Amino acid sequence: MRKFAVPVAIAVTCALAVAAIVIASNRPALLLSAPSASTSTITPAILTSGDAIVTRKPDLAVASAGIQSEQSTASGAQGDLAAKAAKLISRIKALGVADKDLSTTGYWVGPVYSQSGQTITGYRASEQLQVKWHNVDTVGKALDAIVQEGGATNLSVSFGLADPKSAQAEARSLAIGDARAKAQAMASAAGVRLGQVIQVSDLSSSSRYPSPISYGAAQSVPTQVPVGELNVQVTVEVDFAIA
Image (cartoon, rainbow, N blue to C red; front, side, top):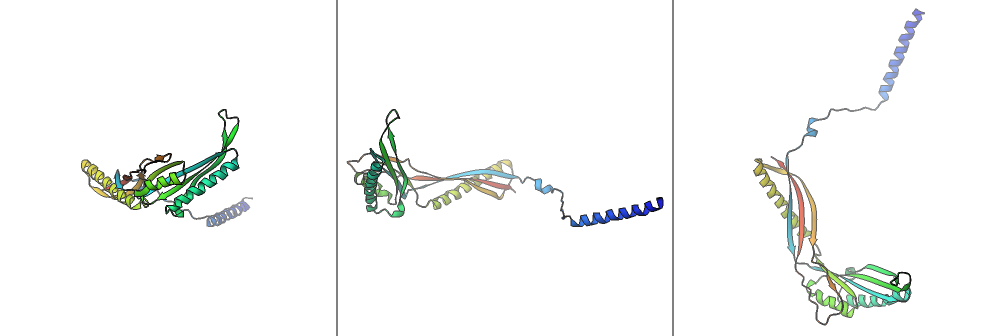
């Protein structure tokens, strides 16, 4: 038995070796690397923020004109509103407002309830239009026409810039300069030299508009709407390397 055991053991060992080679040859290659010490290194830097405000005269007025109707039936309220809307839209277009500058921002038809809330006393329909007026110096006359001749029952207006990108770009450049000045002061105080910019982030870019002007019943004197100025504000965050 011992004579046969040795060859059998050798054969089994060889078979296992061959199987191990076959299995190893079929496994996908794995690349293992030790963590690099440089990946955990924190680059010394100075983090600052900068702010800037650029002032511009508005060149765009945005008016919101509303009309409404209240009737005993929903169809009656809707029909009366349609007639009022046609009159208002016709007057707005007669002022020279292009189709692209006139849009509907709200339309509603619904019941009107009694004080107890149990009974429907009628139906109300309302529509809100948005008008873009590009000649801000004559916006008062336009508002008078919309209310007195167009029949708008409520109106508000705000001002802005038709293309705010140039003002935003100027404010952004000034904000980065403000951040650099702060970083330079911090570097001098710390006794180090300011290096190159690592990262810049635009945290906010907004325009501060004058408060909307509410406009109620028809006026007997021309409406005066001072345009004033608006501020375009930008805030940035800048990371500077320490040289």
